[in-house]
Image (cartoon, rainbow, N blue to C red; front, side):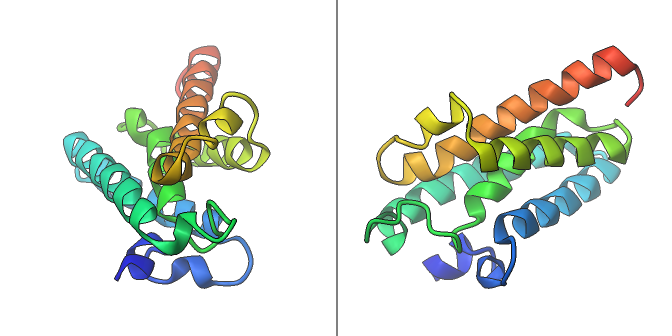
Length: 151
């Protein structure tokens, strides 16, 4: 069951870019939640993803075997992608897409402080780097929105 949840229904085992796939699914959930006008629901989903992700990652084989954040473990990418967009309910869908793109750049390149967050022990490290990448992406989206106007 842990593997099923951490891989988001085995999405993490698809070939290619499973972190990007998980982020794209999360973008769809965000757009649905935003369409339904339920930003509180998105915050609840984010809290659940973060809490469950840390607990499951810590208690699974995900943090062992020398591979702290295995490629198939994509629940953390989902949480980070949601952080990247959650404050932008009501903005055009392009804003959410920009948040997703910023998130993936920060998640893949892991600039400081993302790389420092990744060093936290166990499940915290698996999740924290994605949450920090999501925060940086969200800030970038806000800066673009302020510079461009309605975006």
